[in-house]
Amino acid sequence: MYKKTTLSNGLRILTIPIANTKTVTVLVLVATGSKYETKEINGISHFLEHMVFKGTEKRPTAFDIAEPLDRIGSQYNAFTSQEYTGYYVKADAIHLDLVLNIITDITLNPKFDQNEINKERGAIIEENNMHNDDSMWKVHELWSDLLYGDQPAGWGIGGKKEVINRLKKDNFIKYHESQYVASNIVLVVSGAIDEKKTLNNVKQLFKNIRINHGLVKLSVKESQNKPETLLFHRATDQTNITLGVRAYSLWDKRRYALQVLATILGGGISSRLFQSIREKLGAVYYVGTESEFLTDHGYLVTSAGINNKKVGLVISEILKEYKKIKTEKIGNAELSKAKERLRGGLILSIETSDELASFYGSQEIIRKSILKPEDIIKKLMAVTSNDILEVAQDIFKPEKLNLAMIGPFKDKKPFVNLLKI
Image (cartoon, rainbow, N blue to C red; front, side):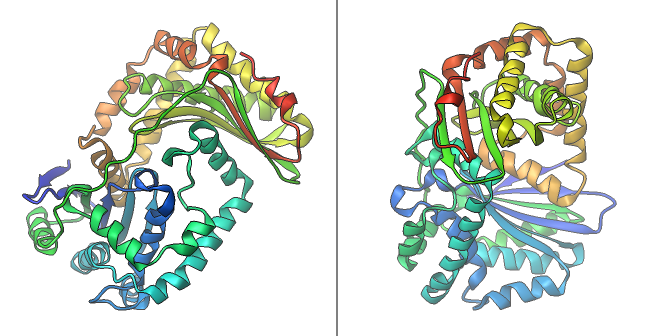
């Protein structure tokens, strides 16, 4: 069971004691990401995530940060999303004090040395190049661009090369001072811990944290009245697509029915789309459907890597399954299988200290409230065939269809003409 403690300065601390483990995970989540950026600094959240590992006043170099973490055999990394940034270390629990000291130091006290910024911008650009060269990755960036266009939700998290090249020390200092503040931060400590001792340690480490309020992200604006397509021409041996619809935000009660629906369509090898497109047609290597829920928007999307000669066939087959699920009620056996898959996946995903830290922390940073695993399972198990039918009929409409694709095609008209349901 987790315990939430909110300090007088607004910092939220989650402690999660776990029996029968020898590990501990410290996770710092900051409520900032690419949706908090302007076009002039797009990519700074991700760039800053890199820079905190380059040195602090207490630990002046990247080696001074990495070496003690490597020496104890820890696992550590960081990540940036549209709505939050995270830093974590997982280690032998006997090293908790060291881990807390280092992760607190890099979060609160990065130096942002200009020489290090100049060097790291090359690494950032190469990371972006790597993602751009990967069509499976790139097609999801196209998907965001297609749905949300020229607003933060439609921009890439990594930022454009010309923006990355002009970011300087003052930009990082200003953004860090604005966003890395007590009310924006959740610290999670999970594993073999003494809660009282850990809380006292955290309070001391964060006693000087800034307490001003961070930036407010712009709300997503959505507008669509006809099917939309975005084609990126690339001379590839395989065509990668994302095909789906706008759907619901994190706060919408229909999200649970949508999760079950997505699982029925494309969750696993026995799902409808995998069986019809891979097993029967042999037209793809991968195909899957997922639902995504953010604070002010969401979607359902099917992704696939397709034989270039069978792109039209696969698109038609996906749409056929979309149409079928909105016209024919799901049977009890298929409904039960999908819900059990989601329940089992959730249980498997929270077995370790780092997984539990992520499960509870990601909810707190976004929702500022937490659903326990049993709460989520209860909501999923309550989904009915009628719920799924109602959701399918709501989202699977011609004017909500969107198709992004990367492949050796220059004319999108043949694919646009397929977008009927």
